[in-house]
Length: 114
Image (cartoon, rainbow, N blue to C red; front, side):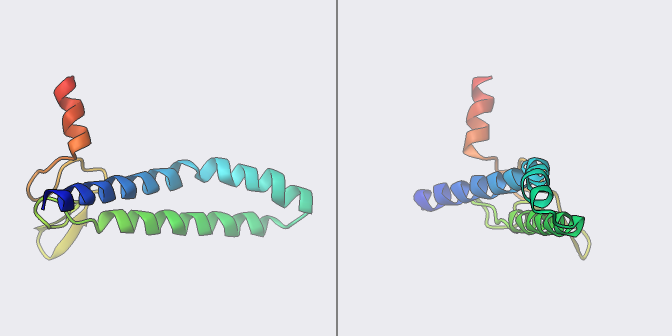
């Protein structure tokens, strides 16, 4: 049981990492694509716009994947809450479970040392 919970926390960190990597690499990737691919090959700017749209869709997909995470402790939606009536609200910036207030072991151990 404890091994399963630890594996779920690893999945949590993986999803967060993918979300932030896709977000932070957008600008450097688009600049590099424009300078080293689009300009030297003489392609139209539509290629750059298409790549940017594709990257934004990848970021939206990674955000959706992250927001659908279930809490390793209670099994409910980690970032999702139904407290707003019938609407499911998601807060991917939350550091605690919206239901049981569980916090990642990595975050809780860093708080203990401070």
